[in-house]
Image (cartoon, rainbow, N blue to C red; front, side, top):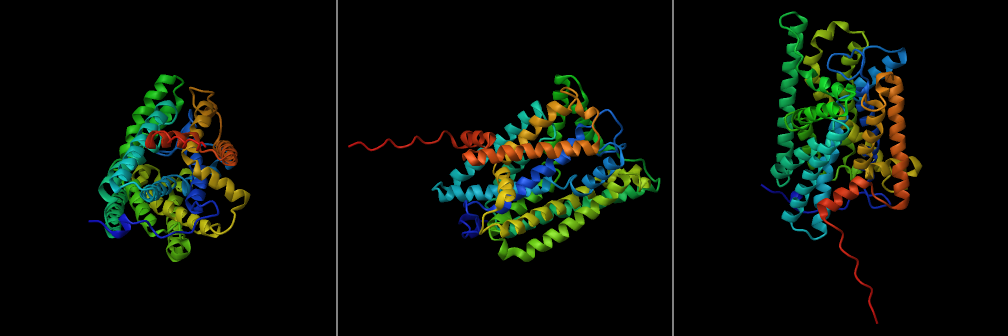
Length: 421
């Protein structure tokens, strides 16, 4: 079943002075800071870690504060935001290609090529630098969901997003019941959730370059298929909601959707932070009694992370609406410059982090604490901001975006020859 929303361009939205919609770019700019804060704790090797988490169980008072804040507000809360924006962007690309004169089938073939290329980019990213790559998972989910759902009605998108959320909620409830049974001594702890974390640690703690690459490539398929892929359900649900929101112009015209955005922002972030707080308190020793059941509470953490990620998107939709009709200023301009080059800046994070922190490189991750690592992560993000601003001033795209565009669209058409007299 098709719908007019699926076939016709959305009405003109609220774009900034450059013609781009500021909300998604602002969100991507901040999202990359949250991503590097979420990823860098995995580089802290050679010390005890808490259950299935990435954070060490030791450290100074500052380290413990940083660990608690990241577990509550960042861990498993960023990638749903990324997935929503990815789905939103697919619809915007499809819309632009139709306006450029491509047929519906041609535009969908272009999306298929882009998603296949993202899987390839992700595989190379994992092989060379970071096994926790998300590009492969989003490319795979994009392939499946564009094929199954992009021609479907808005109602169908919401129904299937609801089905996915319902299944996730059911699994979270069953996992929580299992956790209660573990705490009551009725069954042994479940450590299945720690597999990916163990592989992530091995990929950074192995001083042998080939051994670390093998660990990354063992971890990556689990990321692509399960943790952040179709089986995990969080990413597909987020992408489907991104499809729906893009058709409705939620980020293009936030003033028309303020009630929805405010409810999502307040409700989603509240659910996310409250859901992460028990794990944070357990990690810093306040709720030690929960320790045997931590693996069982992974699914509830993913469910509340989905709500939190959508809440973060809503916040930046509201903020982007305030910049729509006026220049964003230096800070807003810097964030949107990063957002427009999010693929390049995401990959640059691994280029800056892995050789410095991993044991096969300089090995700084073996000695840094959580607070110092968070400061390092912020420094990495600031370097990518400076790089993006420099590219923006030159009017240049990010190198990864330029390569993806060339591979997906082919070489640019030659400029017409000047007229002669």
